[in-house]
Amino acid sequence: MQKTEDIKTIDKKTLSHSFHLWFWGALTCFSQEHMQTFGYMSSMLPIIKKLYPKHDDQVKAIHAYTAFFNTNPMLGTVIVGITASMEEARANGKQIDGETINDMRAGLMGPIAGIGDSLIDGTLIPILLGISLGMSTGGSPVGAIFYIVAWVLIAYFGQRFLYFRGYKFGDKAVSFLVGAQGAAVRHAVGVVGSMVVGGVLATWVNVTTSFKLRGSDGKVFLNLQDKLNSIYPGLLTVAITLFCWWLMSKKHVSAIWTMIILVGVSLVGVLLGVFNPGLSY
Image 1 (cartoon, rainbow, N blue to C red):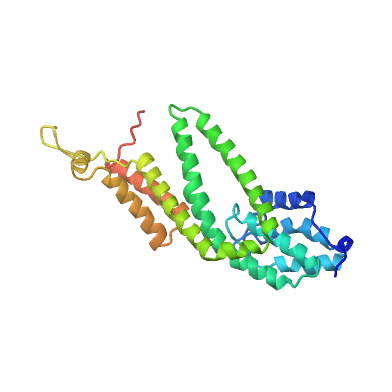
Image 2 (cartoon, rainbow, N blue to C red; image 1 turned 120 degrees about the vertical axis):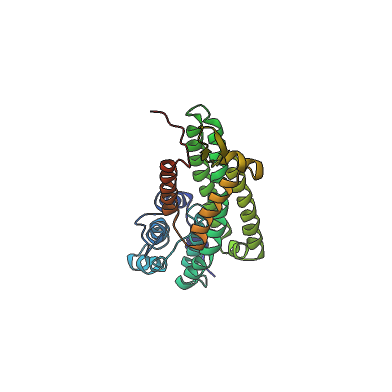
């Protein structure tokens, strides 16, 4: 039986150091080949140095974190906390090796990415942006300030909570994240995210056309937007939304190229008189 004085533990200062390295450097040396691998290794260095005084043991332990890693950087914090707990158990002689730790990391990447992308990118950010846009009416800077402050506070304290919660529960959190409960949470978050995105779309996106046909006397006999409003208000908005969805979902066009295509369509539309930017020179 291991003596109490021989048990290796990670103090709160070391855990905080590890967390801050992840918070500030999760995307350190980011590339398509390694993604978040080096950011993860950096965050584990204080843990490894604390648990393994000998350099050779440190080199052997850190090798488990050289494998490819990529997930949602915010919710991925919980994985770093879990591995810190597992690393502590390994240093104390538990039946955990580098392969076990790496298998856990690989198994959690997908579920955490699914939850994080839906919860953060699909729900939280649109909500914050919606509130900020409402506060920016008339060109007020309050909306931008609110978004920056709210995002920084949520990102920092949210990730810190997840890190220490992952460390506290250790590998017990794995069964929840990859089990039936985790799947239910991912599905629920996805539904909520879709509703929020749809609400933001209906509130803030408005595509209209200025296309008109005039007779020989110069009078307008066809106002396309009025006709569309009488048939299906917001039809162009829906059409553009479905077009963007088709590009990104079916044709796998990146978001950046989708925006470039929209800019091109807008420019051509203005030149042809289909769209009116409402600018005066």
